[in-house]
Every structure is written in structure tokens, then in C-alpha cells.
Length: 333
Image 1 (cartoon, helix red, strand yellow):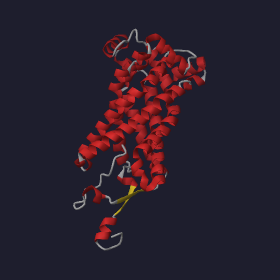
Image 2 (cartoon, helix red, strand yellow):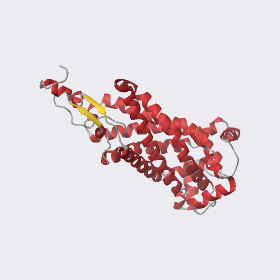
Image 3 (tube, one colour):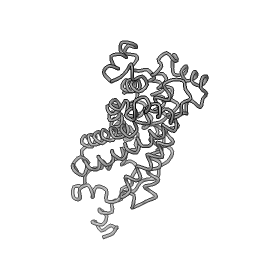
Image 4 (tube, one colour):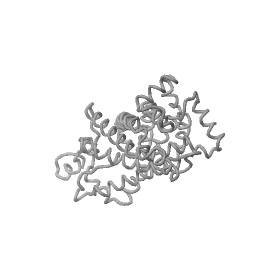
């Protein structure tokens, strides 16, 4: 997602000669609008694609007696609701992640680039810290964008007859519980989304950096580069799923039915029902789900960015100091 240069390899100096000095350009509103579009399309599209897995995961979390495991849940869902049941709640999923993706991805880019410019030459040594801070802040504010849509999605999946459509479910929740109910899971959402984003970006960056160092040729081959991004996304998604699962299970417990349950009450309820292990309910499905989600999002986000002209190389000014010095045309000797 935040990968290195795709400029041609310099025949004399290799990767270093390819861009001896580069500098981030100042971005304008149109650049961030393209980041926003890239994030919105990749997040909504990928989450819509994996809606069936998300439905099964939510069934396991909200009704473990009737849906104890992935295989039995799949069979029971087909029997009770047909194949259409696998796309229950697809509208809040698509709309929620469209807004969330546009907001979170562009905000992450904004903060990351501001910090890179602020730290100047030290930024390269602070890459992990910058990504951690950028992703954490974006996830914090992005949680408030996504939480009302997730509240509607969970209620739709947990109680299929609760409403006819997205608007019907939303209006019923507001009428019966107040509009604040759509945001009542926000504290748990913060505990879920912030660690998820930090783990996702940090592991992705660490894995891709290691692979590029182990296989330098991947930096010059677009197919190998995409493979590196895919592997980094798989590892990032798997760890992110683990660290955020207790909060995810808590949110599902809160929003599965009408209640005034707080995040703390929901967590205690889960522990009372099945011990601390109950906080990891649904983890196998999330480990299957989020490596697909994260790796595919990284790939699609990068592809759309490049298409829209805001890829990594489009946003840097390359200063050919090395070439100028060799030709005696200026620059340090």
C-alpha cells in the first residue's frame, strides 16, 4: 500500500541510482479526493465480496447455540434462509465501508505525509512509528463513521425479520432505542478498530520490508511486487483479526437485540456465559476473513491509486543529483 518506487532500475547504480534523492510533493484537494475514491471503492467492494463470511461469523457470535461452527452454520443458513441469507445486511456493509474507506484511507495518507514532511530526513528511520500513529488516528475517527452502519448490519443478521430493508431496520432501531443506540457501541468499536489498524499496517510494513530485502528483484518486477503486497496483507490481516476479536465479539453481543447493554456489560455477559475464551468466539471465521480482506484491499487500493495518478511515484519529485554530479553539471561531488 505504501510501497517503494516503481521507477526503472538504473543500469549503473541499481536501486540507489534509480532515485538518489526524492522528495514528497505538496498535495492539493484533488489528490486527497482521489485517495478518498480509492479507499471508498476498495473497502466497500472487498467487504461486499466477503459478506457471506461476515454473516456466518456474526451468526456464530450472536447465536452460538444454533450456529456453533462454520460448517454447521453454513448448512443451517442455507436451509433456513436460502442462498440469499448469505447477503443479509449487504447494504449497510457496502454503504458503511464506502464512507469509512474514503474517510480512513485519505486521512491516513494526510497524516502520514504530514509527518514525513515534518520529520524530514529522519522520516525514513521512523517509518513504523509514522504508520502506527497515522493508522491509529485515522482508525479512531473512522470508528465513528462506521459504527452506526455496523449496528444496523448486526441487527439485520441476528434478527432477519427485524426489518424489510436497511432503512426499515435503521428507523426501527431509532424509534425503539433512540438515535444514540446507533453509536452506543462506539467505545468497543474504538478498542476493536484502533488495534486492528495498527496491527494491520505495522505487520504489513514489516513483512513487505523483509521480503524486499530478502528478494531485491521484487522491487523491479510488478508481479513479484504484487505478490509481496499480497503476503504482507495476509499476515497483517491474520494478526489484526486476533488482537481485535474480543472487541468484535463484544459489539455483536451488544447489538444482536434490543437492550441498554454497555460495552462492559456485554463483555461481562460473554465471560459469564463461556469464560474468557468466549471473547474469542468467531475467531476462526475472522482469521479466514481478514487476510482476504486486508490483502485484497491493499492490492485494489494501490491499483486504483496508480490509475488515478496518485501512486507512490506520482507523488514524489526525483532529483537526479547523482547524474548531475557525474556530468559536472552541479550537485555535490
